Length: 383
Image 1 (cartoon, helix red, strand yellow):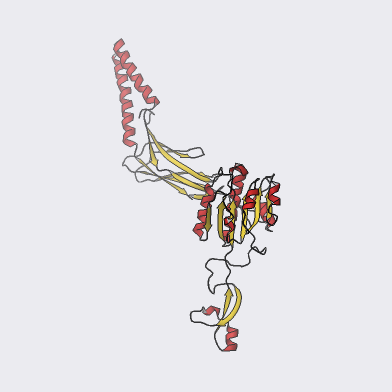
Image 2 (spheres, rainbow, N blue to C red):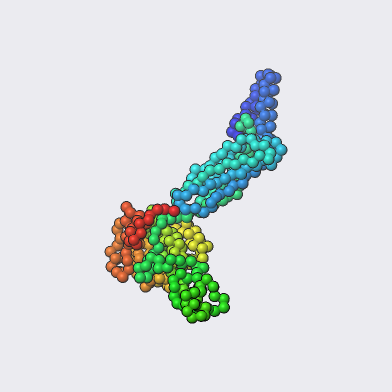
């Protein structure tokens, strides 16, 4: 449609026609008609060319952690025989400056790529789009804008710190060298006992010295490690932490989930508003991280856990803010560590649960530093 310059040119053409009639100057008619024809031709040109450019947007990767980068690639194609006009493409990104790209004329069959990178510094879901293609004539008299690609989204997961997994009962960090879920039957690592060979046993498990002495096939049995069970509770009550502190708590929860996953623990993640998520398989852990990417604080002031968060768990970690007294009182018998963020932790948190370990994380420190120091691990690099 006509731009501001197009409307101005059309108005000038009309005024010239009036002036030509008033003053009787024929040449003004010629100039006026030429201007009006140029405006009409510009409008027709952009209308006929507004679909000449086909755009496909690709976001890779569609999931990433805070601080990582995702590449947005635009694949542009000319579907017509003639070269495309000069176009201007804009792509809106929620919470960021929109991306702009000026596309030169493209010949048919010559694909063109454009792109930009996104490096989000906050977790959450980022909406990308709508993408707009603006086609303008050479004189800037007419322009057509259309949506050239559907909306997309980018899921930003919390920042992950490399931390030690929660301590297992007895203070052991990882009692078995291999805790993979595939370890079943006779696929353990720790020698347990000897027994007679049965049909179907793995011949690699035959204990040849004992077989030579007894004259019968003897196989060794091995102790198969059981999975640890860890429960993580995140305090989502809005009054216990400000926005910055809550982001630190979410990042700590995600870091512990990844540490437990790497140790092949079964994990239960609970929020103080009553939501609970269990993870056993790899896709379960991915779902938990996706949920942590979008979790928000809730106005509830009461905790609806009822002690169920630690049912069947061997270790539990409570992540709370300054007002952590109710959180500590709601913990079941399996709770072992309460990580409290802030410089003014209430005394109630220290006195109500003396049987549990309290780990304060002051503002000037980080969760990874305090947690790894308390658990005897020095690594503190970020993934």
